[in-house]
Image (cartoon, rainbow over all chains, first blue to last red; front, side):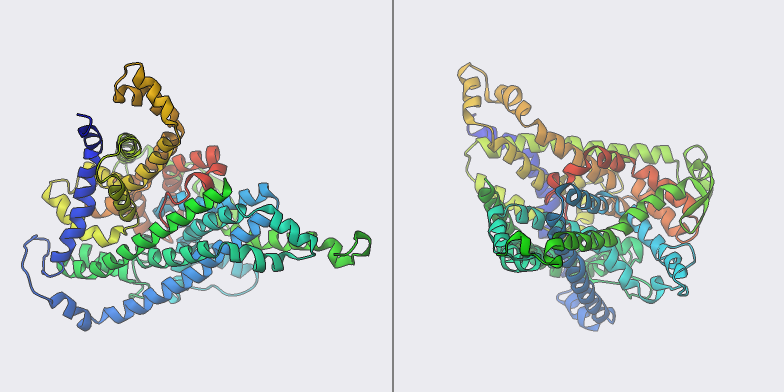
Length: 291
Length: 287
């Protein structure tokens, strides 16, 4: 009985994890070598799906879009804005710093469809949208970014959600740096830029590295906001690998081909997992320092 | 370095100058968020907007609450809201129960495979859902949970379970073992001690998990839109999404009103516990 008790306690969890996670990972692999559709028939077709990669005219567009989307969102927001926010909010009055960080949490806890609506309004091609109201105010004519440069919209929407993760990690890392370092530097007459470059950044180096890697992979697999705002359009201008996989599965119902596309994402998932393990170690180490 | 008396103008005011620029930058990047949410609320109560100025206070946009919207292809809002509530409560209840018993097992029992299972959970947490969507469709179909609210409830729970277990295990770990042994010496079973001694001590953790899982269920979109076809099982996310598809750039009155209706629980949480959010959700939600 004593030996069985823990297993009884974790058995429902194990059952759920096995059905929805482990079985799903295992099924994806053979599925990638079939041409399964909505009939759910296992007809194996060798490596045909992978040969289709080469012939699929959309794949090059999707790869380029994915690269642009990940690179821009990461540098400008998930890393860049996150670092800017954490450096500034930890340098000003604590109460106001917390206020700004709290506001930035709002996009993260807002349901995705509502957040999508906000960005669609901001970039409304007509005269009602925020951007066009502002442009009219400063005397520039109406712009239609939604149809001409939709990637801007996608990067901003994902960025305003994504920046808060790095912001939180960086801010808590910065706060755990002993205040004496800064006192000593300020006695020596060092200014903000100097202390940031010589004290703050070197001490949160590992957090910067962790967020960069983690967010790169996380952006590579994200598609929810793109699906809501443009669904990859207009004419595939914002279609990325993860969204293309989703559309192949649930718009075209080519499950076999979608599974082949997913395998690339599975590989990314495994790498993310290991990086995450490393990240957790960093987190716990920081806490120890703090205590 | 220098004595206070010898500072020049810039040195003397450098803190003030720095603060000025810091606040300016923070305000510029943050203001779009504030404006967008203010617009959302104001627009839902007005007939039109002249720039940012609401024109004509009205409740007409909110008529979806008492009038049928089947003529524009939207099902009854109350059924949809009830579904959303069921999904949110279902996910919260399942995860609270499973995380509290599994966390107990992982924290207090030294069974074979304890450590490796915990690591496996962490790996799974980082796994992107998109990589599994096709197989999940196949699995849900095979176990007859496709196009059911239960399928979405179990799926959403499973995806968050690994992280919840880790959080709750951390809370168990911080309770001294002596507290538990005292109960066991008094003749209580492990389960009785768990219920009477440990659970009251981890109630903060359970509270955080409960709120976050409620919101995770409440906001769930991708699983609902992919695995539910019958519009009587929709939740609010799919309802707003459908309206967004038909009325984007057109009927902001209706869109903002149903969106505000949808984010009421989120707004409540933000108003009550906003300032704790940055601490509570560290890593809890994927970005």
